[in-house]
Image (cartoon, rainbow, N blue to C red; front, side, top):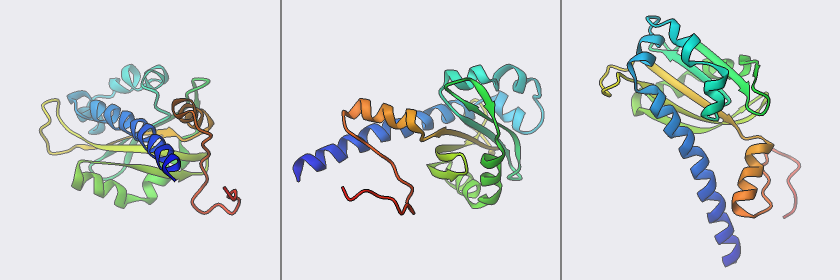
Length: 178
């Protein structure tokens, strides 16, 4: 069915833009001497001046984590973009800690993106190595940005595509027949 293929292509396009905007944001933030020094423990004021709820709201990111070269999370923050209230980062940090191979892939490739399943819901993540402002290294760690694939994000996709879109977990037993 040509219409179905066209609709799928529209969803893929707009979802790709959703992921690309997150990748661009993490790339912008991961290349800079301030981030480079912070992840090494040499710029503690960066946390208070740059890693704020307002800053995360402005770039439309629910989650942020700085992972050092030893693959340890040195800073994490999760917020509710709708309310601007801090949320627990426990599930996010636990996921990163239990998926060390993901961090290894970033060190090898430079960046990685995808969808993870957290207790608080599915999240699109983008990870990028932390480099000096001129792009030189070696990498000091990995910066992780995440955005929940929640009802607001799905509604934005519906609005952009003018389609009735629903997302289901890959292991869902309650899929509709259509």
